[in-house]
Image 1: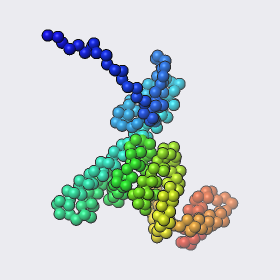
Image 2 (image 1 turned 45 degrees about the vertical axis):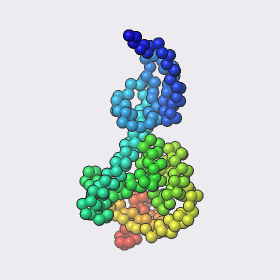
Image 3 (image 1 turned 30 degrees about the horizontal axis):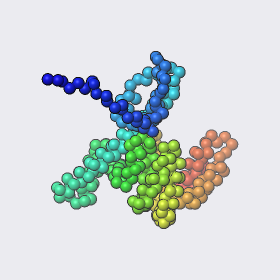
Image 4 (image 1 turned 90 degrees about the horizontal axis):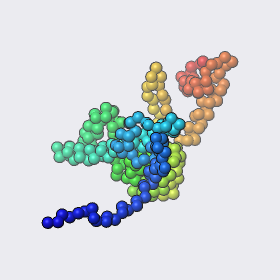
Length: 287
């Protein structure tokens, strides 16, 4: 009886696979023995393993310590985006199953939705309004903006940037939304949220000029004034106005602030502007 000897077989060499584009910069050639080169953590695809590695103490040469610390900040940013994207998928999956369960128990669609949102809010220790916003945003990213969510899950964009694309494409059809995503996502990682908002608005106008006009017509109807409490006996008063009206109101407050001071007035211009609506509306004499 002869045993099959696999050692005599000539196995073909393993195929040469190019490293993924996301991690190609992380490879170090000819690393000197005993020297820990800095790792480009910000270029690794995020997952639980990357989080475990980042949680360990760095073993970098002192000359590269600051560089690696900066890279670790970038790595954690990608891990955070990945984790938030996974939570968004979990939220959407839970909502679908919870709503179906509530309907089976006899609830109408709105009751089924509100009950599921309440469960999410209870888990997150969030208010009903905050929970509803998070659920709606999660549902939109999963169903309407899958490419944006995928970019977030790969750590290429943050939740803040994903929210920019979400809000700027609300009035678009699915077809136009897909076109806007394709146009802006390639450069989104290198942009600030403000730059991405400008680029997305341009892409929206290019994709569907009618939707952009419709949004501009609807926006003034949403003008409002809101107030919420702040620490130390303070409050924030916020007005959402058409741009021209906002510029006019600020000009009046600024003009009042410039003439409200006196020789030894220690208030800053910001403080004077903040005092201006109180002086003008309540009739309080300038301090």
